[in-house]
Amino acid sequence: MTELVPGTRQRRVVLVVCCGALLPIGIDITAINVALPAMETELGATIAGMQWVLDSYSLAMAALMLLFGSVGDRVGRRLVLQIGFAVFTAGSVLCALAGSLESLVVFRVVQGVGAASLSPVSLSLVAQAFPGTAERARAMGVWMSAYGLGLAVGPFLGGLFVDSIGWRPLFWLNLPVGLLAMALTARSVPESRAVQPRRLDVVGQLLVVVFLGALAYAVIEVPHKGWADPVIAGCLALVVVSCGGLLWWERRCPEPLLELDLLRDPRFSGAIVAGMGVFGTFGGFFFLTSLSLQHPQGLSALQAGLWMLPTSIVLGGCSPLAGRLADRYGTRRLLVTAGLALASSAALLTLPSVNAPGILLLVDYLLFGLGVGLAAPLLISAAVSGLPADRAGFASGLFTTAGRSGFALGVAVLGAILAAGLHQRPLSHAAAFEEAVRPAWCLVAAGGLAVAVLGVLITTPRPVHSSAR
Image (cartoon, rainbow, N blue to C red):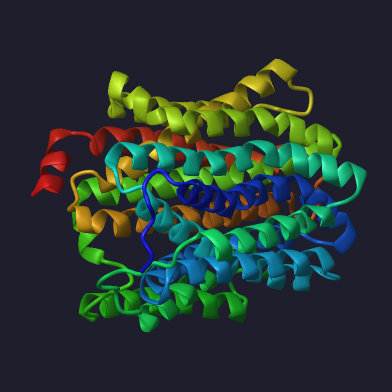
């Protein structure tokens, strides 16, 4: 294993490469939302089709992140990072060339497989390159800021590209970035492996894929097919069987993919549930807001992207500041504030938005960005605090996986509510859209209140003492 020399240019290049792994992932999340109506027009997509464009990518990431983290520890982190860049870049090119909705969804899965390896492996490389506590904290802050930067510029880039040259160049943009990252990785990133890597839990991994895929399919398609449809019934049966099989297998596997005993820690399990709620509302918010701005409100893609930009900027700006604010005001107070901000934002969105004052929408979007930007980093910190050092990395990976799953399920559930309420009426029907989307925003508001309550519960003395034990 090659060691990095402290203070050398090589370490800075490693950090740049690892930031380059997160930047396109952040851009992809927010930019593609703005491009969905253009994809709908060109490819003839339904609401379910647009949900699959987002969820195929997110589900692939959620299902495979833990696996690729273990593979990187075993076969080499640089090798897995190079493969991840190559697969992500190839998937992006295929998405740009997609001739149908079905092919686009398949290629988004390829893109998601590549992205699933970039996040955990780049995190491990940053930790290895900066061994000192203080310098590692600074490097991690820069690494996470790259993701926030991607989220912030995504809506603007998405709207600018769609209105000027179309949605396909959004995917072409990843080609030069990916090629440059692969070249820098090959030249400047040293290879490293874990001293005692975990065994690969193939059975557990397959059960996770089946569970998430079947659950997402059932939720997305049930408004169109109905509960009596045999495919829906079969998917629900697969959900039950795969969930039961996963719980049974993971308790007996010597080195499980999911360490279920971590869930006995109330602080960790509470943070996991709250994190799924935060990321679920995040995914649903961008999906529904993009459709709302461009259909009933009739804005262009660029105008919609500019309206969504404040949310991304506040989200990206709050994330690196959350730790300092928690030191000053307390984690509990900030988590309650974040949950109430999410609930207030969703409550405002239940009001008629077609003729809503611009300042009301701006306040609403700022509140939502504040809620997610504060809650996400504080929850991951709460999840790993109190755990043994040798389990903190795995716990953070599990939290991130749960967050990605929550994102995908948020898009699926809230999109299904919208589709069921529309009753086959077009998205451009303003009155129908307002009526159909209102229950979805009520669910988001309930999720924000749940985050506030869980923020109190996981910061009480009893969960903290339980984590210490």
